[in-house]
Image (cartoon, rainbow, N blue to C red; front, side, top):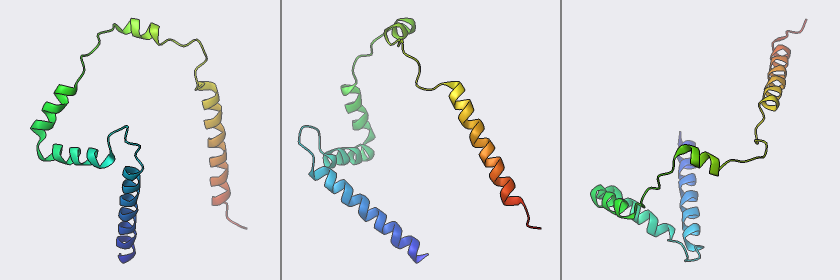
Length: 109
C-alpha cells in the first residue's frame, strides 16, 4: 500500500514539473498555461461569470445545408481504411489467438 502511495505522489510531482516546464517554455504568443489554469479555477468558483464570458466569446454560427457541406469537403482519393484489409487483418489475428490458446491448453503426455 505504501508503494502505491509513493508512486502516486511521484506521478503527481512529475505532472507538476511538466506543467511548470510547459508554462515556462511558452513563447508568449499564446496565453500561458498558468493563466489558463487560473481562469479555469475561477470559472469553477463562479460558473455564472464563466458562462457570460463564454457567451460573449461565442461566434455567430454559420448555416450551411448538409449537402452543400458534403460537396465542399468531398475527396476523390481512396479512403484511408479499407474494409477488406481490416477484415483480413482481424481474421489473421483471430487465427493466431486461437492457435496460441490451443497451444497453451495442450497438456503434456
